Amino acid sequence: MQLFIGGACAGKHDAVTARFPDAVWHRLAPGKRLEECQQALVADTPLVITGVLEWLEAALANAENDALRQQWQGDMTRLCQRAGELKAPLIIIANDVGRGIVPMQPKQRRLRDLNGWFTQDATAQADKVWYVRHGLVQLIK
Image (cartoon, rainbow, N blue to C red):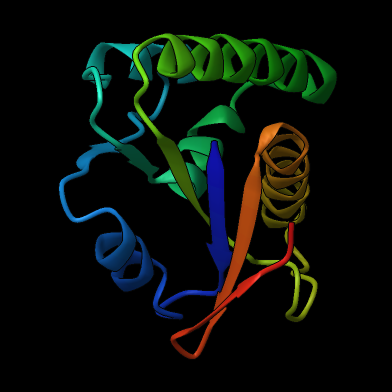
């Protein structure tokens, strides 16, 4: 798996499109599990997963952070395994939202926490992690 992370409008989509022009794009559906992305996997075809922040925002309804993390960690492992079996490169695009002013609203702070944990978990499973800023792409793992 590869993870592309950066701020809003940083050039992540362009960088992924340039590297994986034949990819299938799949937007995470709020309220659905990450492992449901397996349905979008096609043998020998890259799958790009987007919409992580909106998907996590929908997960705010679940009050249990540890349960959420365990669920998506397991889902991510199974998704990576299935992608490997199909020889389908898996790419996740995530937003970096941890470099700004800390919001006053508890819900917005929690969303940033969930996003940070998700990207840490994705980084742990990723073969490569790319940071994108101002259209510049840097390999950081």
